[in-house]
Image 1: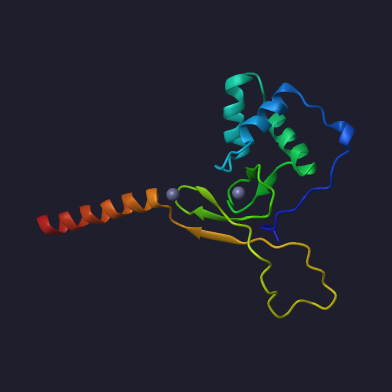
Image 2: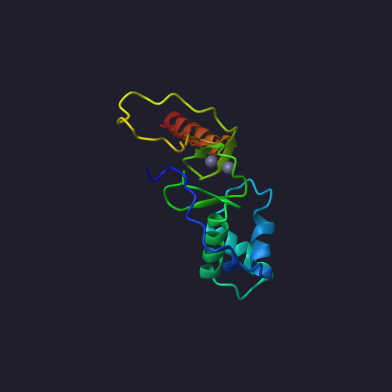
Length: 153
Ligand SMILES: [Zn+2]
Ligand SMILES: [Zn+2]
């Protein structure tokens, strides 16, 4: 359940004010494929707005989520990541460095047997885990080093 992205109940629309800080958060997120965390976004935003607090970034992300303007990606168990693309695409995460890549929005998979009668399915989430090319390389070098040590002995 924790992994299913959900849209939070939208707060009252008039509660949203487009402050320069909010506009900057949207600008940083727009077209951003790195699925940044709130902390990473805060670091980026603080370059332009040095006084901005992490709480402000969190609150802004919350209201953007409530409005369906961004998506919360929960493939990373350690922290929420944020995505300007809300089309329900799948994700692939590197278990070593946390890099998240987009996969095309999947067709609805068949529901495995066992669904309780009358249980209405609203959405699903597909998550894939692996090791990215950059992280796969150092592991290869380590293996080579251990091989060399063995040879010296
Ligand atoms: Zn990696
Ligand atoms: Zn994504």
